[in-house]
Image 1 (cartoon, rainbow, N blue to C red):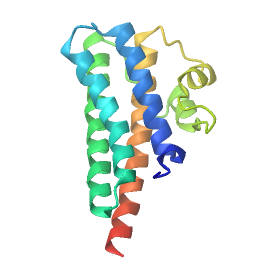
Image 2 (image 1 turned 120 degrees about the vertical axis):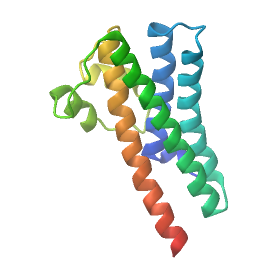
Image 3 (image 1 turned 45 degrees about the vertical axis):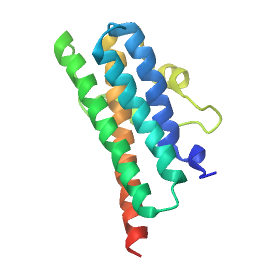
Image 4 (image 1 turned 135 degrees about the vertical axis):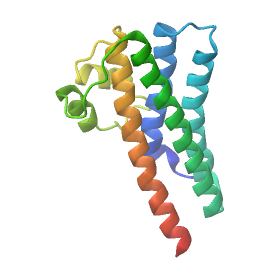
Amino acid sequence: MGGYQNLVVYRLATTIYDATVVFCDKFVDRKSRTTDKMIQAARSGKQNIVEGSLEKSEESNIKLTSVARASFGELLEDYLDFLRQKGFKLWDKNDPRVLKIRAFRESTENLTNLTNLSNWANLDLNEGEDFANLMICLIYKENYLLDQLLRAQREKFVR
């Protein structure tokens, strides 16, 4: 096994995927193409981390990690669209709620950390603005981690 289950980037991707399913159930028409696209982007991000870690070729691993990064970029845009279209506010990166979410560490005991995270950050996941901003923070964090992983993979490939 590739050991991907122990990667923070994988655990956070799992939380993002699970939370996106919950978000879409609550706030997006279940029959809409947007729901399908958001869930597929979240799933693609997670699954490409898995597939890449199982690859024998470093080049393939880098390519699949890049696909994961692109999928989360697409998902981020969907959440930003949601805020804009609903007239909700995007929280500033220095907002105390954002800082609290950024400081949260994924648990190694639970595969998904949505309940732990919402309780810890004191957010109301029944409010679209709170939930979407939570997801945006998590995706920014995931993208940062993926960028770091890609940098390390490229350095290893060059060596």
